[in-house]
Structure formats: structure tokens, C-alpha cells
Amino acid sequence: MNFSSKLLENAVNEMSQLPGIGKRTALRLVLFLLNQPKIQTKELSHSLLELVENVILCKSCYNISDLETCEICSNSKRDKSIICVVEDIRDVMAIESTGQFNGIYHVLGGKISPIEGIGPDQLNINSLIVKVKTNEISELIFALSATMEGDTTNFYIYKQLDHDIKITTIARGISVGNELEYTDEVTLGRSIIKRIPFENSIKNNL
Amino acid sequence: MNFSSKLLENAVNEMSQLPGIGKRTALRLVLFLLNQPKIQTKELSHSLLELVENVILCKSCYNISDLETCEICSNSKRDKSIICVVEDIRDVMAIESTGQFNGIYHVLGGKISPIEGIGPDQLNINSLIVKVKTNEISELIFALSATMEGDTTNFYIYKQLDHDIKITTIARGISVGNELEYTDEVTLGRSIIKRIPFENSIKNNL
Image 1: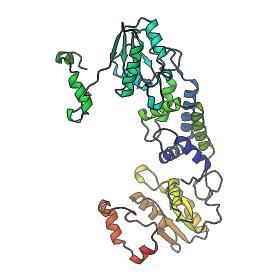
Image 2 (image 1 turned 60 degrees about the horizontal axis):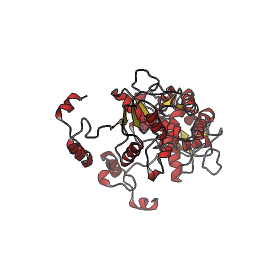
Image 3 (image 1 turned 90 degrees about the vertical axis):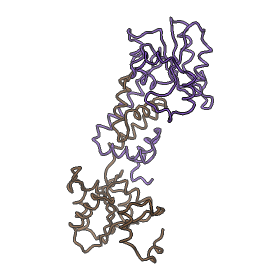
């Protein structure tokens, strides 16, 4: 691309560092900002800077937070004896939006992935083990993605724990609203093997 | 979306103001920045602020520029008697990248569009008329998009000008490399009506 302005080129280059944003999209975004009142760009820049400078991770669950202890961990109405283990904060947001969980979370910050060079030490696993061993925890729920890395991480944590607490994993099966013929074979096969009594499915129907 | 941090929510809201970026994409981009070294966010913010604060439009052609007169207008090797009229600076970049044009540009800043409430007065049309009338211009090339708004704008400018200068428009027809069967009817019909001597097509073949 031939840029007529160095400032424009810099802005496009920086913008195109973001994932999924190529040079052309970056140019479109930057030109959009140029056509808007300056205040919009100032607010965008300011909010990004504020975020990276001031955001912290909850010291208990590693969720993103404005305070030392996040809103969920400091909420007295939440059941502190049930911990839901997730990969990142997007998963916390996803589960929170279902309104079906009243315990607390533990954000690992990823999953064990030898290919990407991520071992247990780069994740918040040790703090989870300590938390489970030093607190009155009744149940640990694994809510990691249904991939080999997710399963490996689940198993690694499972091996570290005494087995006197209840350890569960979120149900896997066909998605609500999905047509059988479009469901992948592995999921469908597994959902037949792990079939549940029909009465249970009625009772828990959302 | 339930955000666990006000700072995160602000950043996502600002980011999702950009065209084509919804809340989910904005969240992904913001979390990506949080995982990168802080310097990356600082550089992004800084380059955007620098751009909106300091960029100017070339006083002659309205192209984006760091100086009062852009690189193209101040280049003594360019033919100042040929003006290519375009909608916006992306069109300048597109034509420049072909390496087939050695004149100068005039950026209108859009096209006449009654539906969007854009009339001739919101565009850089008057300055173009003045430029053509007060300088030695040999040719004016319309390079606007092949839409009704583009054609309307071409015609509006055409009517304002004395017709002793050559006024041309870029060729329309089937794209190089395109299969006939996938070309739309209007383009194909027009390219038959406006057929050119075969010798010309060989001569000008790029």
C-alpha cells in the first residue's frame, strides 16, 4: 500500500496488529475514525490505556476486576464451596449470562498445550490446588473446552487432588436446538453412550 | 454481556463503535491487547491520537497528507494538467498502486447521494471547478464508482464545466481474469455495446 501520510501509515500498521484485522480493514477503521469527531478517537485511546494500566486480576479467582477481589468472589450470596474451573474470562461471562450457576470461578488463563508450549506452570493451577486443599470446597466443576487440551488439563488437575471432594464436568452432548443430522459424529456417538433417563431430562429442562 | 470490570466494559464499548466490530469481536480484541505487553496498546493509542490531531488534507487535492501540499501534488514529475477525480483517499491509493497514472488527483470526499443527504455543497466540487477554470488543465478523468450516485456526481460536475477541456471516464467492462458467465448482465451488456477495435485491445494490453 502507498500511503500519502506517515501518520496514516503508522495508525494502520498499529491497528493491523490486532487479530483478524488485516491492512485493508485497518485502513477502513482508521479512515472511519478520521471522519468522526476527534473526541471518539480520544475516548477509544483513553479507555484502552486506562484498561491496560489499571485493570487487575482478582487475587482469588484471577478474573479481570477493578478491585483486589472481584464482584463474584466478594458477593456474599454466592456459594463459595462450589468452584467452576474455566479457561479464561470470556467463559466466566458466558456462564454468568446463563444465570444457572451460583458458585465462584477459578480462571486458569488457558489450558495445557504442549504444542503451544503451555505447561501447568504457566497456568493458575497451583493456586487452585491450594485453594481446594485449604478451604471447605464441596464441588469442583470442570468447564473447559471439549478438546484434547481441555481434557488433558482436566485430568492433570484431577490427579493433583484428593478425591474426597466431588469433581464434575459440564455435560457434553448435542446442542439445544440442533438437528441430529448436522451434529458431528463424535458428539452424537458420545451422547448415545452417555444417554440419561428421560425423567431426568424433563426435570432439568431449561 | 456481564462485565466483571468497568474498565473492560468501557474499552469494549468504545471498540465496538468501529464499523463491522460487534461486542464479541471488541471483547476479543481488547483481551488480546491485555495479553500483549502494555507498550503495544500505548503505541496503538498514540498513533491514533497523533493521526486525528495532526493529519491534514492537501490544500490542493484534499488527499490525506502530513504537509500542506501532498507528495503527489508537490512532485515535479507529475503532469499537473491531468486531474483524476475520485471519491476518497482509498481510491487514490488504489490507482497509485496500478502505476498507470501520472497526473494529479482531486478527492471529492464522497459522491452526491440524496438518500444519505449528501449534496454537492458537502463535497469538494466547487474547488474542483475553480481549479479547472483557473489552471491549464488538459484533461479531467472521472474515476468514481460505477453506481447511480457516481454517475450523478460525474454528470453534475460535467454540467458545471466549459466543454473545451477533454473530459473522460475510466473504462467499464468485464474485469481482467473474469469468466463471462459469472459477469453480471448490465456489465456484460454494456461491454458489448462499448466494444473496441481488437487492435486497440492488443496495443493497450497490460
